[in-house]
Length: 410
Image 1 (cartoon, one colour):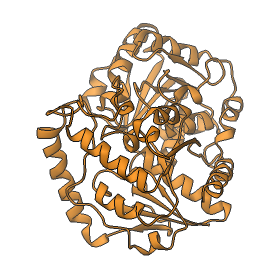
Image 2 (cartoon, rainbow, N blue to C red):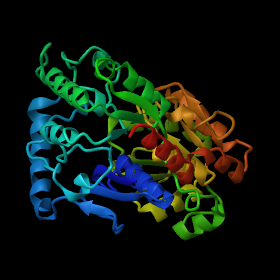
Image 3 (spheres, rainbow, N blue to C red):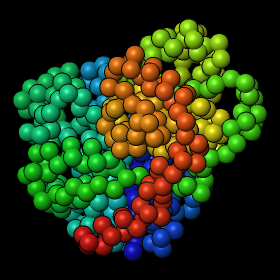
């Protein structure tokens, strides 16, 4: 089957990584796969950059729109994507025209606006929208928090500086509704939680769109347990310390819960700080290290190989996210045999099972999170047992499930 996947990037961010992993799994299964992106950074030949000549202009315009959105459109603390000022008209691209099936992933930040999507939907090709957040079925927000307006058609959006019953969120919602009526997609949730949320949406209830659940895949031939002492030696870490790992694309994103994690670490400091150190991967302000009682190693942005080494070196991976779908980081950590401590948010409990491969705390409860971290340090499970807990996310199994879904809806 000829399948074209659409993603803003091929490696930048968890959604992009999940898209590329699915593409690789489908390719290995025997499908003819192409990934059409705005920004290509990987060397995989099946990834095609839609408009290489526009790369610099795209980046500049994206920065301008981001600044404008934060200043005039969206309230602080909210993540809302409206139509891009200048997107990509891909409906006549060979990778689109030749495809038997289109698989949409994260297409914000200047890739596809609703006008371009309308032209793609109008081609009449089967569309499977692999959801990494709520954006596919809301009026613009990626995570709605406590808001349930997407269940009734959006409008009166708390994320917008100028909100009303017929505000921008309502306008965008109605335009998506028109798309879904034109060519009803299959909305594929990476977590059962997100799939259930999508089914509540007025977009789904008022159209013939379907919802299905298939998780993100992981390559267990690459992510697997290894000797912890060797990993620490390679990273220049002490073999005599315990290590707690935190990773996020941007630790400053409130949704990632670093403020809650900091309070949890403070309550652990008295008895753990002398023997335990903190590893932080991703974008993080250097002041983070200065504000913590634990000795902290800021690792910066890590490639796949370095991140795998960090999982293998750590005793516990901590994910204090307040809202999440199905984080790749949890799958990667567990596959490497490292238990996970986090909040019981979104799709996280679909991977972390307390007492088996980690421990979870009620969302936002820092003291309970501290106890989850402590319990992980005492967890009497060997690395291979922990790794086996994610075998059903293995890439070939997910490719089999996706193929059955594609064939049943052609």
